[in-house]
Length: 144
Ligand code: 5GP
Ligand code: ZN
Image 1 (cartoon, helix red, strand yellow):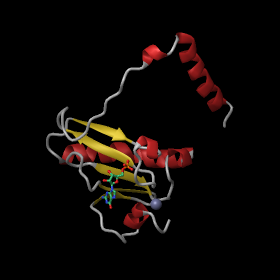
Image 2 (cartoon, helix red, strand yellow):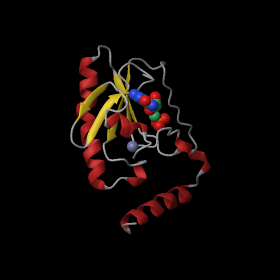
Image 3 (cartoon, rainbow, N blue to C red):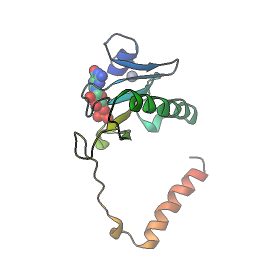
Image 4 (cartoon, rainbow, N blue to C red):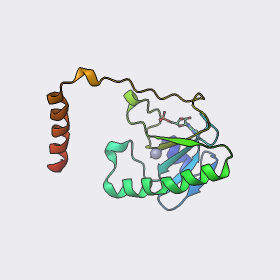
């Protein structure tokens, strides 16, 4: 895609700090470095978000994640954990619309990045909760 910043990075038209490349996947340091070693893993094929993946592309991209994650952990002292994050859609804070997986190494709990899940479990009855799951399950099974 001609006006996509990540397609331009893959093509070498915009410089990047590359950490990995093969025929289908590219990985490079995120410019903001939320924590040291913050890396983005992207498919070379331009897809906007997870809703445009097929199983083959998902398997291609996600199968590279452990290798890159382990390399980050091995090569940077002090990495104790890692958040692996994928934002889809503006509402989910996606800002670059070429799908990417964030690998955010963690050194301690209170640093550069906060992820806080509010517990809303008390807003569902058991029935509503099971109904919600059943609806998603049914859609998966119908192959839609
Ligand atoms: P999102 O908010 O879409 O999940 O993440 C987009 C990420 O792309 C941001 O963390 C941002 O720092 C990173 N980013 C945007 N432009 C560039 C760039 O030109 N080079 C690099 N290395 N990262 C970029
Ligand atoms: Zn692109």
